[in-house]
Length: 326
Ligand code: SAM
Ligand code: SF4
Image 1 (cartoon, rainbow, N blue to C red):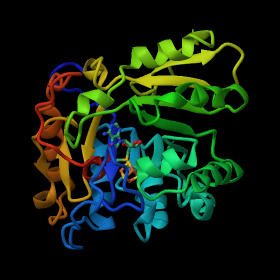
Image 2 (tube, helix red, strand yellow):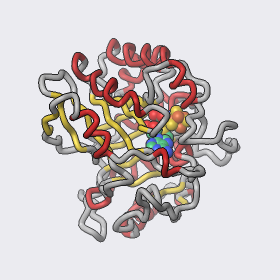
Image 3 (cartoon, rainbow, N blue to C red):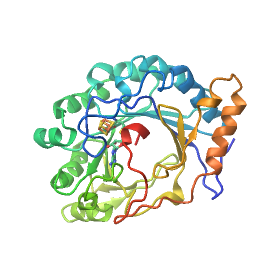
């Protein structure tokens, strides 16, 4: 079954957030004191999250990404993942993590049926990593990447949010990680989700990121796979891995957007930067799957053509990515 929106985009990808809590405090994602704590009653139970995943697959979603907050801090995540992985019709179950808990959990995640990991890593330098995450230890993430490989995961996608003056001096170092390792390193434009003061000064357009790498390494374009996301992908000539840029701000990829999101409180969103959301809670209490499926179809029917943000202006209400799942 195909799920197509009013602009002809095929929607086959759900980002499902299982918690808004996190063991890091990345400065571009949340305030230093963390996000306001939600009570247990506000966060969806695993049963409800599973219903949403199943309904999404029933209407045409083929890929589910589990995200958060930090998904690995929620107790009981491994059995939940195993249930989602077994939903008939789901082609890909993937997970985004900051990697901190992977040393202990990678093998269980693999066994549960997670097919691929995206690991967020914004600096290879201990001090810069700590400045950005406010609390983190980069060695834990490096150990997490090693644990993922040892557990049999395919080489991870490593996502770096590039911020001028904070970590942009490491762009070429990150690209060079792909010379000897078959990783996919993706450079993500900093997005003004929290609308921090003078956010424009941190944004580096994807083209500038590419130009900096191309100034020292020859880049060749890479063909995209069928379920590939919105990144533009390249390989440094002769490298084992690939690099990609995600230009969420400077170059809208809205025309190719194939995703919907559901937060850990059950708010469904058809666009990250739209203030609109559809509360799925009323459709969860009743054991009539068709109601939930119809609600998700309505969400897709209202998906806007594009968001209204660019490198100079942002019109959305400030939010934490940890609440929406990135
Ligand atoms: N905690 C997990 C992690 O960090 O990978 C999953 C949730 S996190 C909200 C998902 C993704 O959103 C991460 O790759 C993070 O870097 C990205 N993100 C958060 N805030 C962002 C921002 N302001 N601009 C760009 N990416 C952002
Ligand atoms: Fe936590 Fe991920 Fe947000 Fe960083 S980006 S604070 S790791 S949820």
